[in-house]
Structure formats: structure tokens, C-alpha cells
Length: 294
Ligand code: HEM
Image 1 (cartoon, rainbow, N blue to C red):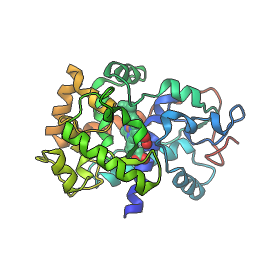
Image 2 (spheres, rainbow, N blue to C red):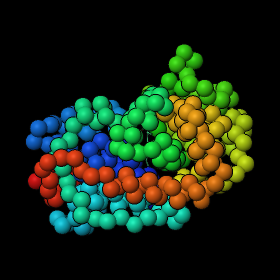
Image 3 (tube, helix red, strand yellow):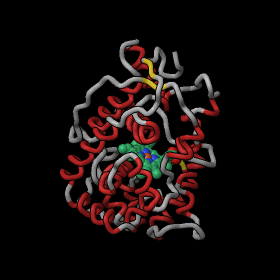
Image 4 (cartoon, rainbow, N blue to C red):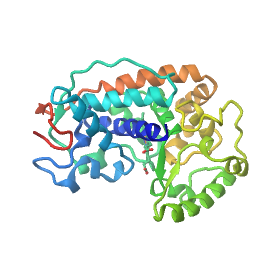
């Protein structure tokens, strides 16, 4: 089950931001293109540090063959990830027929994709470019109830000089945990779980987390717990916290905290919209391998 959930998170992550770049064209899966080497493609972008699960996409493609595009596989994996991770509460139907692009650029990804250090105005502007509302930005950010983040994506929050408001007890518990993770993962840039719900009781108690309305046994589940954490200043990313600083966004944060069913329904609708973003290129194909153009 653990393996299945990890893979499901990966599927969701691959889907999430890649489509905001150039629509759903599978460009994030390419290892190289005719005009870009491996260091120049989208998956090498600094903003895409968190993407994983490409082997899962390869395995699905191997089963489905040449008739199904990689772009369709990405959005369908995202749909299934949402269903699995939400224990069947987030389901939606998608049409197929997407085609794969032949362009993939790290520079374009870094210039276009939202960053974890963005202010709320930048996040809103970024989503608006693809015709997504502030409410949809808040809805989709709820995906950060699951998965992990590298320390490099949230280290600004642990540094007094750069920190945006973060609960001090939570920050202290996080700093201790990150030090332990460096040893366990043998790296200076370990990955930490996004959701305080998924931390052990010792961590939650040390942080003073108020779990009223949160199912703390639903570890790894895609639910509305992100909003409980954000409204207590107990989230990793600045881009999650800054949603509190916008009048429109902050109203939606409390709406979704207080109404799980509303969030699930709106999340499903926003995922359909994300999955249907048209591809922006001029040349398309159905790739034989998701990692290279034909
Ligand atoms: C609002 C703008 C967003 C920003 C700035 C953002 C940023 C990030 C960052 C920095 C990470 C961690 C990367 C790392 O250090 O490993 C991450 C992970 C993740 N994001 Fe987002 N994200 C955004 C929107 C979304 C959306 C719209 C979705 C899906 C609907 C999403 C789903 C995920 C998931 C599932 C992970 C965890 C991946 C894993 O565990 O491997 N994110 N995001």
C-alpha cells in the first residue's frame, strides 16, 4: 500500500505544475529533445526539483502502447492519484485525445512556473495567465496535504532573517526534525512531509497543533487538512502561507477548512480544468516513448 500511495503522489505531482507551463502536452516527461540536451529540458528545471514517478509513467506507457499519448497518461495518472489518495472522495471524468509536444525547456519552466518563495500577487498573476481564479489557486494548493518537499524549498521559513510568519513552536519542531532527517537521508537537502497531520504525536504536541476537525489517523490522505495547517501558520512553503495575506484567498481558506465536501467538489472541478488546458505548441505527435520525441 505504501508503494502504491507513493506512486500516486508522484502521479499527482507530475501532473500538477507541468501543465501550467504549456498545457497538457507531456513535455515534462522528455529526457532530451532535438533542440535540448538533458540539462536543458523541463524536468531539469530548478522549479521541478520535486517531480518524481517517471518510471511509473514508463510502465503505464509500456502497457498501453503507441496509440495512447503521454499527455493523456499524465492527466489520467493525476486523476487516479486523486481518487486513491482521497480514498475515493475525489473523482472526476476526463476526455482523452491529447497529443504530445516536441518542445521541453528548463529555462521556460523556471521562467514560467510558480515558485515557493512567491508573494500572493505573483501566485495569483501566474494562475490568472492560465485563466485560473484566486479561488482555484486556493483550491489546488490543498494538494499540499500530501507528499514531501525538499528543505531547499522551505529553508527561507526556518531562517529568522527571511521567514514569513510561521508558528514559533512549529518552526522549532521542524528545525529539529530537519536536522534528524539530514542524517537519516544522508543529504544536506532532505525531504520533509508537507502535512503536520502526518507527523507523529510528539511533533504535533510540541507544535501545539490544534487537530480539531482533522483526522490524524488518515496519514497520507488527500483531504482538507492543508487548510487547518495553513490557518495555524503550520505549513512548509511560503507560497502556501501567503494565501493568508490576500483578502479573497484567506476567505476561501476558512471556507475549505470548515467544509470538506465543498473543497473536494471544487478540487475535482479545478483538476478537470487543469487537465484540459490546451497544449500550446505547433507540432504534435503520439510519442512511442514518453522520454523522447519520435
Ligand atoms: C500554487 C503554486 C504551487 C507552488 C509554488 C508549488 C510548489 C511546490 C514545491 C516547492 C514542492 C516541493 C518540491 C520539492 O522541494 O521537492 C511541491 C510539491 C508538490 N506539489 Fe506543489 N506547488 C504549487 C501548486 C501545486 C498544485 C496546483 C498541485 C496539484 C494540484 C501541487 C501538487 C504537489 C504535490 C502532490 C507535491 C508533492 C510531490 C512529492 O511528494 O513528490 N502543487 N509543490
